[in-house]
Length: 152
Image 1: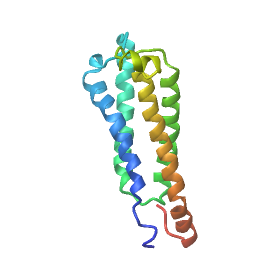
Image 2 (image 1 turned 180 degrees about the vertical axis):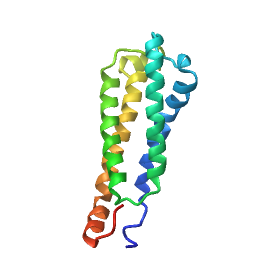
Image 3 (image 1 turned 135 degrees about the vertical axis):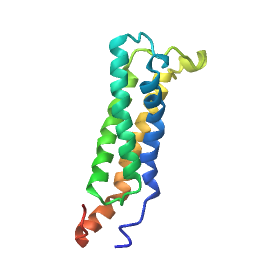
């Protein structure tokens, strides 16, 4: 049983999800019109607030999952869901027209290093981190299943 209860340092990926999402959560809920996005009309502000509330919920879920044992099916389900979320967000941000009116300079622009692409890359890395966590801890789930450890 002690081998299964070991907490993987790779679980920090759940905290990285929080770190990536929380700035948009806070500003999206309390001051959405101050976000540096182009063309924020009333509909976009409402949708931004709805997104921020869903994102806050995912942050709370990650905070609660972080310290759970790696073999629990709920934690593993959250990781798969977040992998799908971050992969889709990454793709959407890479394909999005410019909507953040900031630049990293002409040299960065010539290399297509834009805020949207950097943000998309960060989401892609968190999605990849979820896959790495999954693969690195799958043996714990298999061990728990074989040992007949109650999984919730």
